Image (cartoon, rainbow, N blue to C red; front, side, top):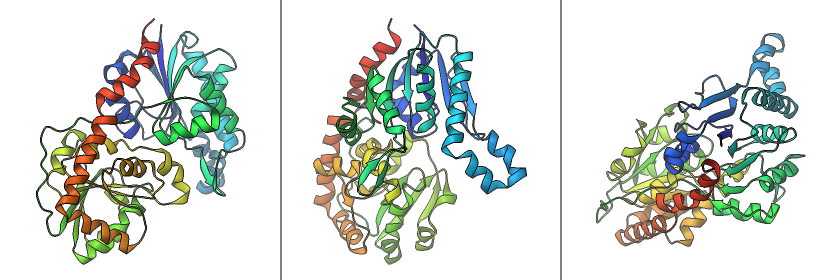
Length: 391
């Protein structure tokens, strides 16, 4: 029985979602007969795992066509309008039905993140029944408005159809799991990035002066406002901060002025070894209200890596953030949950305390082994793999 993959994101390990897929599915990624990336921008690779068939649907044709006529801003506004995106999604569904002859017989792993893949799957199911597992790594349609969670008009019903129609639902976090159960009455399993516990603990007995902090990863709206809170301590000289990233141009200027050091991104398999050279690894989570859906519901791929690091983790983010809740319940990690100089200074002082650092690290290892090892995630994935690949 054919197996297929449908998502807005690539299945390649070139971003957080792709890395999570690779870590949990492993060789199962090679068992898919076809991949369909429902949104493909010009700079992105296609999700191809030979000898699988690969489909990618370029977005932006309308915008490029309109630019010479009405200008860039108006062209982008029209192309980004929900009606334009819905029209594009319907075209993707039609083309996929035309090109993938095994679609009706396939069992599918769907990883929808926003509107396009949900509409594509819904449109296809108006013509043929689909058997699929859904893995919600993101819910970009959800927003926090007037102290409640809201979906855009029409999309709550679409989400309900999608989740209740799945053979099984995976969510990226316990917070998302709880929300979907309460909102849609849907049971799910948590499936997120994993990491192995390192063989040796390289934690130094005392922290250095200044305390050496390190961050590995992307620089964007979900990270930058939290990272920027370290600028004051950088200026005072109580900490140093090295940032390993593939996007150095996105670093907040306040951190550059304060003395943060930019370094080139490194392979994921060298992160733990490099982290051992520092006193703490930083995990930033945005305080911005418009990114609350990410902060509250998402577990970053690097969270398990931080738990596995040979030094304690310093998490910066709002108290309702999923990763902060998980760490706090386990008495692991050190946290900064307020946007104030006092909160930052207090956390840095705790990092200088050997007992605090050793206690946090011990709790992080216990949390890793209980919830975030490859074996834990493999056991959760196994029933879906049997459904997708075993006749």
